[in-house]
Image (cartoon, rainbow, N blue to C red; front, side):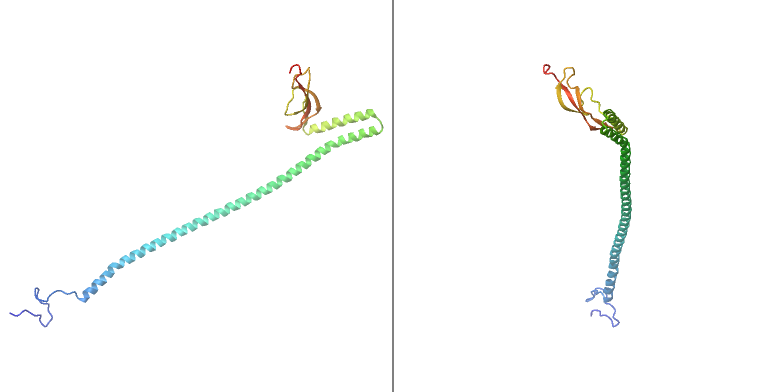
Length: 218
């Protein structure tokens, strides 16, 4: 028997027939290619979305940083302005304090000079008495001048240092030591020059001679 052949209409031979291996049409290949492109397209779209999201976050962070920077610069300018005002206020205070101190010193000098004028008048009277050989009036004038001067200085806070009793190195200056039988060692024997205090300040220590131990006792 002869093998079956395809009819003229182009029908596919029955299965099992020789030369009937299936072949993929070109249309089917094109469809598969298009389907693959459609499947790959979402991948590209997803990556682009990630990039856009990351770029948006970067822009947001940059704006946040710029905002904080602007706020910091504004605070810096404010603090700088406060510091400049404080420096100007302190400079004005320093100048005002210096002027007040100078004015106070000038008033103090004026007051002291005004108090010393009567002493100058007493000295002139004493000199006038000396020119006329009036020794009694001269001695009286000198004594009056000293009393007036001591009173004036005392009104300014001047106090004479006590030089009686034991030697005190804080207010006394020992010029020399000498034996003194009736005094214990360390006692002041004689005042050579008087010392004075102005408040708590030693203007001049009292210069004294201090009793030393007797040679027999040594």
